[in-house]
Length: 636
Image (spheres, rainbow, N blue to C red):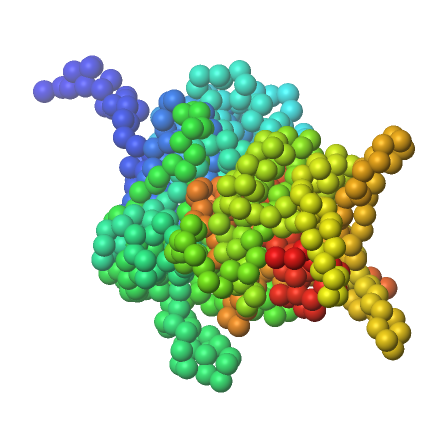
């Protein structure tokens, strides 16, 4: 029986007339045949890379406008871009601009990877039949429903034309040239349907890619410990703070680890083969040793999930981060040995580039000069701040004054002659009267109160000189009346100060980290007369050199014990962070080496670091550190 005309019509349109695809992009990826440019050939299996599942879902989410992906190299960032483009062509068409770092790179990427993948999709092959040859170039395809343009991230490609979709690959290479912002502006006309996808390794802190990523909710990949099921991110190293539930683990580290013994470090030199074989991850919660074995890595993969670290971000801005450690195809041994070699180069040779590359490429992290500092725990052992401490010889109050004298950072310390010091109070005050109230509360004598007088020196010292009492000081064997009041301290770039001392044999010169006592007439030029204010200059370099090993709790130095922090270590205003707000730099000039402590970042507060630095000066002045002061002291 002859076929009906409708049968012929149905056969003609059957291949082109299919139900719309309603699945996720990662499901679409499973239908692709990966060949040219891919290390793993064949169809993609989401179970082999579960960390890309949520990023694919965010790209498809109609409520998301910006997706920023920051990850280690060779961890499927480009795969996300490659798969998304054919998905858009078939299932959600719109003009698309794909930007790589340069035009030559774009041409090479298209010819070796992107275009072969696009043309390998049968449905797209059929669409290309009706596209004129001049509309199909090596970097451009003008489909009937959309235009695909691939080029370099430059001024020419970021101007004039409007696109619904814009993808930027390796955005960190744009540095701070504003091109990312210009590329994003190409989507302005598609306010409710646009998608701006930015992918790349870690970049430089506060440059354009980093700034954009910080605008997102910054979802961090987490895994669950196979032993305790505690969810945690992949850390290079993470300090277990004073709030850790297991006291025996406080002050220790979790994260990327390896054995430290005679096998891995015979004769004091690292055996990299042995280090590689011993590579593992330490659980933050239970300190379990998570081995680099296929079944263990598979177990970690099955537990992967993302947690936003910036939940206050707009819901339209989504960001993801994962390191190379997330991929079971990348050995932990490779990561550990690369990290150890980079640390050796940085610590022993002062060559930080390998460490920077490890952070940016292996771990996908933004790099800043303080990124790689492995902070030790602040020395904190429980002690009764109100109880008697038999070793206490002095009690001092130190205030770091802000420029407008509207806020003061105040610390009270008990000091033993052995050099040990304990923090008794840590407060912020809004006036000199509030400082005096803290002084009275902790029973600190006037002559043991020290104020930073680097700013508005006259006003600060005027307050110092009027807050005191009449007392006695010993000069040799004599006691004389004197006005005992607050004292000013002023940091200096001068390394050492000369002190002269008269003896029977003549005048002796000594060098110390603080100046001889100076006096300042706070009423100079006014016709008024009053007691002059006492103040000292002190060496920023040497005071902070004395402080650093005490802060880190190094062996063979007196303990400097602090109160528990009131803020998380990650907060820049926390005591922990402020005590690490500066770094020591050494420079060579005219063949001479000099050192200086500089801020890690201009915007980072360092108030408690300055307070503790002044404590070192006071201890030096008392003779607890270095030679004792020969000037008259108050009779106790």
